[in-house]
Image (cartoon, rainbow, N blue to C red; front, side, top):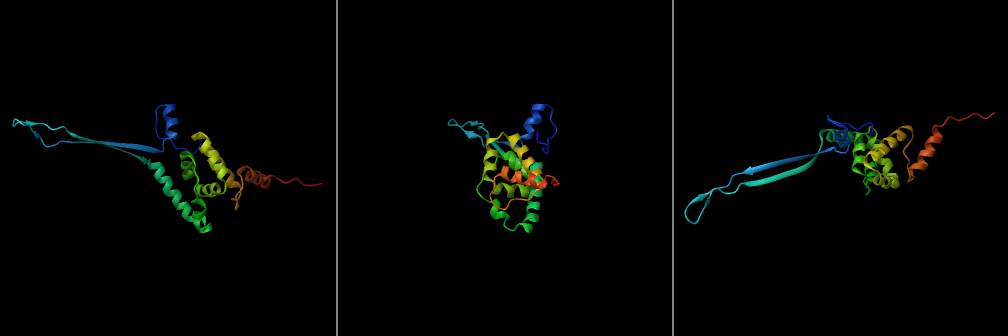
Length: 175
């Protein structure tokens, strides 16, 4: 399980596993209203059937709303360093909801979003993964970005990671 996923109180492992995939809540309301009585042909009065409305909506959880607000604050700060952030990130790419939710949770989520704008093949790979694996991959990308710089041109993630690892590797002295 991804290490930064928050799980509210649950009773069983199955419910905890389900909670990792459920950052949204379903809210349902049933409204029943009485109607005016109906007059019959013979002059009598009958009770009219009730007017029943079932309303439901899927809404983000409190945690997800807080994470989105914090992410937005970090993005506004990051735009001071990267003025073209919106133009780079607002490209038509598709990632799974679990990955998006994980980006909102991560401290360097804005850097992850910028990296994914340079690496569309990573986005397509995330779409092919199961949700937990996609969230863990976002955490791994976050860890990698903490060690290196964001690429400025389109480059594949494995190539960038190899270059970053070469920068981190201790250099041996020649004798």
